[in-house]
Image (cartoon, rainbow, N blue to C red; front, side, top):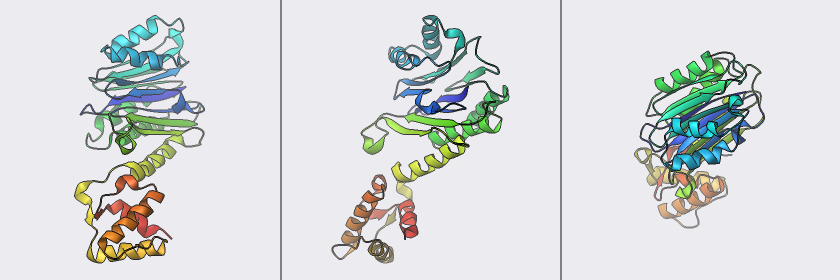
Length: 281
C-alpha cells in the first residue's frame, strides 16, 4: 500500500526516507531514521516495532542486510512485511514478504533502497531508482528524495490512488538552530496530490529554516539599507535608532516574527529574506 525510498547522502552526513501511499498519514508510520546510524522504511502490513528495533541493531554496527535478516527472522508475520534499510556506511537492502499484495518488490544499491507494494507495476520502483541514480549529487538531499518519490508517483504509484506522503531527513546537529538532528520532518496526511504538496512544503521549509549561502549575502549598507529601512517601516518595524545598525536590529526583529531567524547574519541580508520582505504588504 506504499512506495518509498530510503537513502544516505553521498558524503554520508544525511540519512532520510520519502514515502507516499493511499493510506492516511503514511509519514507517521513508515519512516524512521537516526543521525550517523541509518534509516529504514517499514510498510505493507507494517510492523512498527521494526523502527526502534532496527535502529538498535544499526547502532551495534550491523549492516543493512543483517538488520533485515534479524528483524524478519523474529517476526511471525514477515510474509506480509516490506522493509528498506540503509546503514551508516551506505550499505542498503530491501525485503518484500511473499504475501505482500501485488505488485510488490524492491531494488537496492549503494546508499539507497526503493520498494513498494500494491503498485501499478515494477515501473514505479524502477522510476525511483532511475531518478535517484540520475539525480545531481550536489542537489539538496531532501529534494533528491522528493524527486525520486515524484518519479515513482508519475510512473503510477499506488494502484489504489493517492492520499498521503512524508519526508524525514536527519543529520548530526543539522536541525533547527543546531539543537536537533532532525533536518526535515514533513507530512501530508490526507491530500488529493500529496507528493506535489510535499514538494511545496519542502520549498517553504527551505525558505524558513535553511541557513543562507554565504556567497550570496548582501551588505546591509547604503542604498540597500535605506530600502530595507523603508520596507520595515511600512511593515511596522521602523528602526529604533539611526544608521545601518538600527536597520540590522529592526530586520532581526521582523525576521523573528516571520520565522526567518535562521537566515539572519548581522550586518548582511540574505537575498531570500530580501525578496520576502519586498513582497510583504
